[in-house]
Length: 187
Image 1 (spheres, rainbow, N blue to C red):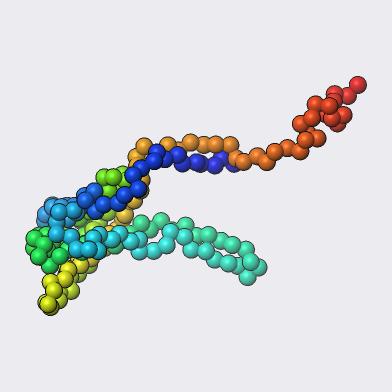
Image 2: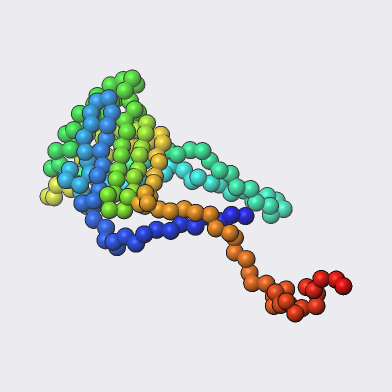
C-alpha cells in the first residue's frame, strides 16, 4: 500500500480579502465582483449542494460507501447596497432569464492570490434577485447562483506530492540480531 504525503512551503499566516479576485463571465456580460467591487462584510461564499459520499450500514453491520459524481453547488455574492456591481448583475440577470438560450451558461472564477486557491464554477445560473431592504442603514444585496460544476483547488500550486512507503514498525531484536541462531544458515 502506497501512502501520499503532502509537503507544503510555509506561507504567511495572514488572510486579507484584498487578495481575492472574482469574476463572472457569460453571454450577457463579464465583470469583476471581488475586492474593490463594493463587497459587503460577508464577502463571497461557495458551498457544495450535496455530500460527496453517503454511507449505508447493513443489517449485519457491514459498511457500504457510495461515491457520488455530482459537483454542483452554490455561490453567494454579498455587495453593499451602494455597489455599482449590483446594476451590472441586475442587467445580466434580466438578459439571462429572458430565454433558456443563454440561461445557465455563465462561469464564475474566484482566486485567492496569497494562498493560491482557485475555484472555477461552470454552468452558472442566477437563483433569484436579491431580497431588498430599505431601512435606516443601507445593508447589503445578496446575489445567489446555482452552479452545475464547481472545481476547487485549494492551496499553492507548488505543493509537492510524493509516494512514500507505508509505515513499517520496527522488527523485534531477535529478527535483526546476526548472532540469533534462528537466522544462521543451516550446517
